[in-house]
Length: 493
Image 1 (tube, one colour):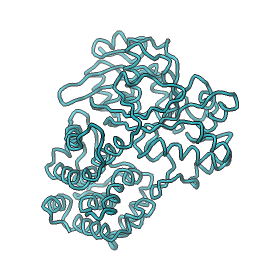
Image 2 (cartoon, helix red, strand yellow):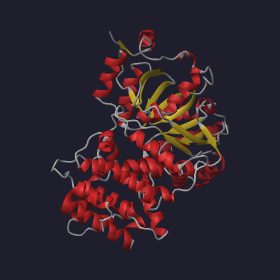
Image 3 (cartoon, helix red, strand yellow):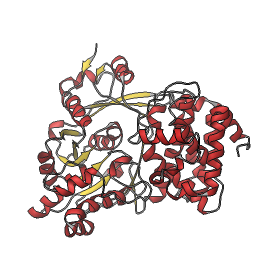
Image 4 (spheres, helix red, strand yellow):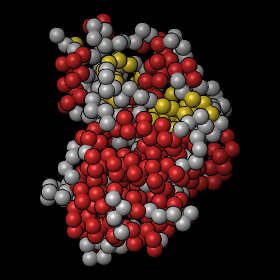
């Protein structure tokens, strides 16, 4: 017997899953969150659920918000089950399901006025975001706000009727200021270096286009704490829906699967207060940067490193990539010889132990994380997770054999076919341009590096150019497996 997830069926769901002990009708929203995807529901929402389970801070429930077409689909599915989510944690040795309920509503486009009205509600004291690394309108080469992006140009031309997340935030802040209500805190939960500063740069950059004085007011009065967030959370498909039904007896139209491990390191800058998240494992520190850089370089950089050789070798799941001796050894050599040595010290943390943990997490077969997920959106991820390590090494006069190989693998991937000739399906906003330049690099290996908005000054460095061209030539002449072998043997020129 199975039950369709809802508040009315929690007693049935409790037979095989943990269910909320708090009452949904006694929650009050204190957070508006843009981007109600899997990661948010496996991370921020879980921490709040655990806090509510302790009987604490029930006035910090979540109202979701979204401006993308996919957000309406999420709203429809979650509203049909009273905004409950089944979160399935899968470790190597155990699995468990928890029904969570910290969300009370979702607001979506095209009802932008309703979103602005809720942002203006004094009860909303935090506005949080998980809108992907590419959602901040930042030029990847310069790391600065891009005022020429069409979405930003449109909102700047009509700031009273914005359609972007950042335009809505600005409109909400303006409405609050006019009403004499203090500004909310804006809390980014995306994997971006200095994510609080990046968010502030986008909000103030957009505001400056139409109202420079208000942009200055935002800078002086609105808090943008930095954060490091971490939990491997694959996409939901039929596999996850079926396991939730067959193993836990719950019909959930959009369950979330994730690893058992989770981490959140947060800068304590919340002028209007915050939930007592330290009681459920969140680490509050004065400076997030060391933790953030460690995670982005070692974990996210590791994901970016294994994605493309695995795809070129027709490997679908991440744990299968880690079962491949060449890929696992490639990752270890790259991390230990080129990435970890230039990661600054992190308080009370061994970087070698941290990488050992990453290896175990990547190897978890129960998660079902996929190589296509890791390979998507590389034009936003490579400049954030790989190229900063490359740039740091080059600046110190250090070699970049392995990091240049990662970039060459990305280029080879965008030629469009795996080593066996299998067609590769791209998932990147710049896919057409990447494919065109990758094909052009067959005649000129450096054509791909001419994507200056992605590679910046790294692409013009002679040592990097030489290492990249050599790796790309090897990938084309002898294939991915043999190129990895040559790299491991120190024979890749």
